[in-house]
Length: 295
Image (cartoon, rainbow, N blue to C red; front, side, top):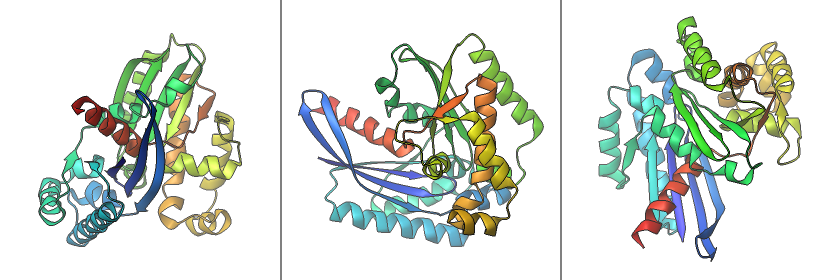
């Protein structure tokens, strides 16, 4: 069975196509067939003007049409599609969603920050980690950061903050917002010992790739600080040239690292695991769970 997830974020839109094979009863195996990313950068419009520009609207609809063709070619049986922070804040977001449905048949749900955090948790990465451990999911996007904490497999809190990479680049995150996040994290993790981070999002995945760490090995907080200092000391073109980064990655990677560093520091975590999961993976898991209940 082929399933797909579409994640329309503030920086990029992703299409994840996955093969699901059930080897044993209730033990599905998820195999990624393809992941396509288009850097729409909706947040640069929305967080400045409050709306998606006509040019970006054309790009969004064209991207969804292309995704529709790919879904048909791959013979995908079921699709789950969501839009996050930029589409949430855009005053013309619902109108664009309706136009996409009319032209492609794709139904896209604009989800809340808390729903986004819950869906990221659906990836179930923690189930394969140390039993009894304490973990804090940190998903950094262009418009928001989603946090989900659990101890011994039980969720203890989840929260979304409107602190994201594009908002930071646009200087639209003020000190009270940082203070609110710091106070929340510290008050909810103060009695948790040996907590580790679990990072998701394209920026932390890129840092992990650059680090040359073996799969499953964590990145230390000190290493993230070193990367932040180095990236921050470079111009955008220098980052692109030296690290072979696309422009739409080279600009947001600096504020992303700042968010990861602050969250880890405030939670008292010294390391972060990077299993290369994100909202699209959680959408696939949620979609499969819905389908399984109907069977």
